[in-house]
Length: 414
Image 1 (cartoon, rainbow, N blue to C red):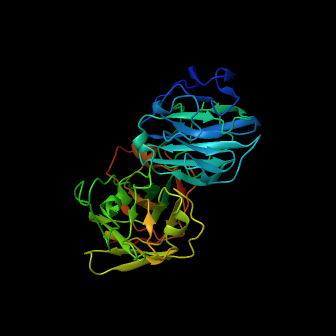
Image 2 (cartoon, one colour):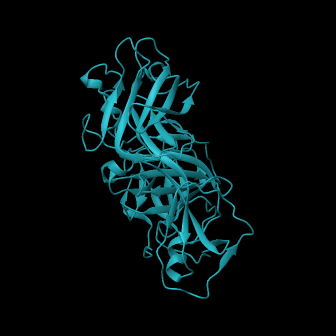
Image 3 (tube, rainbow, N blue to C red):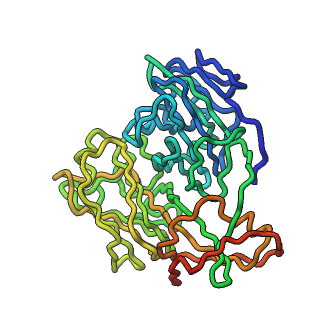
């Protein structure tokens, strides 16, 4: 649990023309050359805050690091944001729905898993970025996206109740100021057994620097256009330029790329980012399969992704598929191309999204605090494949159990 600290917008680190009021929680931002950020930065943990608007022409809400500064940061590569036009920044491509005056933007900063997620009036807009760990220490920040207008925004780090508190925040999420309000923790009881669930939605960036570095990862493909576009570059954790990509052999756009994780991994989602080049609308694949293998020889088709057109430069699309099996090898195999010359991929990141079952041996203060649910339970009508067991702890008699009449879930053991 984090300690409560006072967090405001920083009056000593502020862009030109910005005025602060409301104990430095409200900012009038005149143009794109001005950015305001928080007094406190974070480099670990899970944090949530809200931004509301009393006037708005253009705005971008999100995070930035020290290198971004507080000037013209509206397309800075050292910032990750959600614009009022519905784009994600700095990619400046379509992400969520637009927002305007009287809307509230919620921000989930999951530094443990390297994820940034946004909400509009409590409705999830999805994960905007999975590449925030390389930024290091980051600050909540707000900037304008136009020289012709800005916004008047108020930020709530948790000192007052949130207007829209999402129900899908991961366990362990705190308000950005660490102000943990009183919550009701509860566990499930079924057939005299105690359970809790743990929701996970994360990706596993690899930061590869060669075909076999770092160990134990190994990246291979059906063929590389050249050493400048080697297949390992699709897993290098960056997509800053057009050369940070894998390109298939010239004249062979129906190639494949795979990663050997060195151990079994359960993945059921893929973050796919196009090459950072204007030709992405033709070089990104139209159709591809995601395959899994235990030995790199025999393959199981996990899903077929079809009809992927209209790709943009440096665009990220997340594809979910059904899988509960731990494979050591995962492959992306292009089956239909948008180009007759070659195909290109900027970045691939595998991840897992789902619910794990926790078997709780006893009612105890520690077990309730660490494993009790504080948000609504979801996914209990689906098979839960991952089961973990919590060690015995000190008992506590005055705890509450949520009783259910029947076992609500199927459990598969592997």
